[in-house]
Length: 324
Image (cartoon, rainbow, N blue to C red):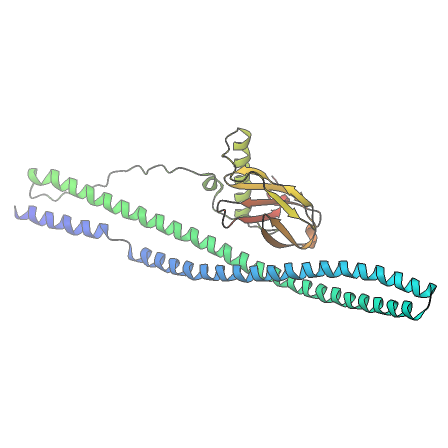
């Protein structure tokens, strides 16, 4: 009887130990979650800076376009006034030709001014965009690490609970028959539940490539993800499109073009692009990107993600990156 009581006390102690979470793992997970919170603030701040720079660029681009048109009109007027003054050199004609020349010079200076501002804004947008993309990638990588740590913690906790249950079962069976014998518990094999595998899981963890830059993981992610969705679409296994029509506007590259629904809240378009900083417009939102000089006339893949209609995202990358 005395030994049976001791055995029961041992079972209570071992159950408590097994149920406790791994302190090192929990501390690491907590630290990573704090890092993610701080990094998320940086991503939001970088996104705000990028939006401001894009707004400045749009304003300067619009100002340059208006100033250029005004310069064309002023040049036409100046030539007409100068010709009139040469044909009939009276005081009125001479005065009008001088005023027309002054207006032309003023608009020419305005075009130069807006050109300089636009070039500076393009550099600022490119720098802000690079900062944002780097931080966003760090954020996704850290989210993956946290997910892995959480899964590991839950897995260890499940194993410890299972071990405690096996100890209890062994104690209950052996105690009445052999009160003096201490039974060593043997953990039974438990089959892990099969989780549903999504297309993204099949593709592996990664992010979309950006312009001409991509890691092997990102290339594999994009290639597999697109291939799976296209295969499902070919078999007619595609969800309904959240938006009836999606038109991508790229004035500096290809004008306007409709995007095809790929499935999984993604729209896709493949088009040749021109090099340089330019605006890609979707609905009422502008996305500014700088296409490298080496990619002039290269085919680019555009992915429009509307999984969040309030915060849609546009991804673009060189098609040859994912070529088999």
